[in-house]
Image (cartoon, rainbow, N blue to C red):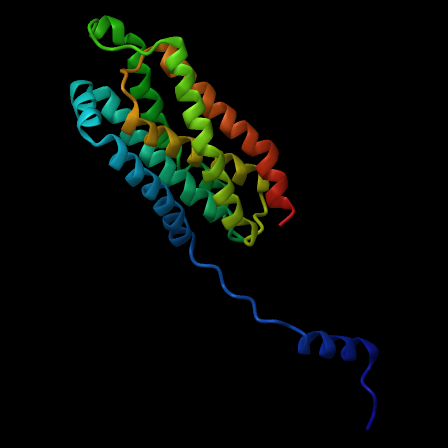
Length: 217
């Protein structure tokens, strides 16, 4: 029996050592799994604080309700976009998916800068209380970002930094949505600036750290 050429022998040997790779679930399904974790946290907060105060505040200030809707939709869209970018061949245009709800979130929140003019008798958060909001958003964004990074490491995204930015946006938006459950104050300029700083911090840290973690997957 004639011997196979060296390259043929190498191919045959590598072929016999191949291990089947388990296919990843579709992006929407993995995003749903992450969002279920967010929903579980929301359930715990609702058990602790109830819905009465939140519903009363959102009903009294419709712009805050629209901002909350925008934050929730931003979290959903950014998570879906992040998992989509983890699929080889997906276009970078997926990164634009969270833009429309983010504009709703930002625009509706911006009305809060006029809160003391529109409703002068509303309860406005002090600087110290606004700082607590920053701690809340950052604190919840850390585990939510870590969870999504772990879920995406196996996918090995080809655009790790862009994916990490979307992870940060999804985590920050989800944390801001969770904050609405226990946030006892109407939005004012200082409060909104604190929220914006928290979101920017989360996105920036994810871009710096998450990109490296994803690229090493």
